[in-house]
Image (tube, rainbow, N blue to C red; front, side):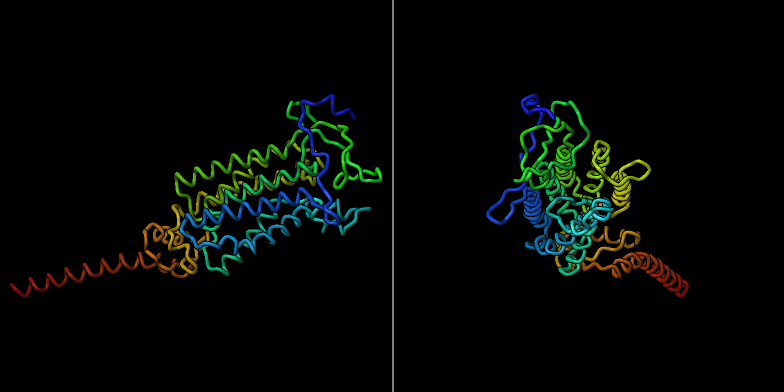
Length: 355
């Protein structure tokens, strides 16, 4: 260990991440998560209303999505780092100690998406459009949440000598025993590391700006902006994972989060390419106005995109009616041909009678 005065050029870590307010512990990690959720709901509400949706919808759906997301994030963390909780000598009950950190973003997005789907079903609003409205706010919330990793001295990278390296301090409880999560540092530097949580936070902020600009210029809709959010985050996370050397589950020597990032990136890009182009109208964001076809219903998706392009159409669109719309387009062509044939036959008969 070296004295902190020898490395003042580096970024210092907070001396502690928990403060006691009487018997209540105030945890910086939890406060950052809560702040991120509040900001995401507030900004998401504004974006939803700007698109023509009803006020209060984002908060209503968040009542389903947030609990599901927290549970999903914890489940993913425990599943991918199961040895911390279920290996020999570990304490399985600590798998429930969410306040000690450990939320996997992939599990949070997946199960949070399930919660949002349930909420959108309850309030009868289209999930893809809802996802587009909250995509930039969710990523901003993730950036804010990364500050919690800073206070917890976690998710950092390999040791380094770069000027922006992060100082890591050992922490101790009141009895002088090591307590990295709840203790206080003795101002002695243990090592200098890459602040990978900071890299990820800055990347998230950059992608947020790009998403907003893309949305304004090209009016992205039908879940495609959400797909860009997932792809953008996954791309950056893949490289951040390569810089980390903390304990993690690996496959063939590669961190499991790197595999997840690559697979999710490819899936998000595929959705962006094949999903319906354009954006839903304000009428289609109203409760019960539209239920989007499934991604594999290509014909129905085209019909849905066509109806969305008709401003002020106000046509209620369901999965079944979308299929009917696609079929009606073909039947109208057939009817037109039939009518033309009848008209020509009638004209010929009239001409023959006049001879």
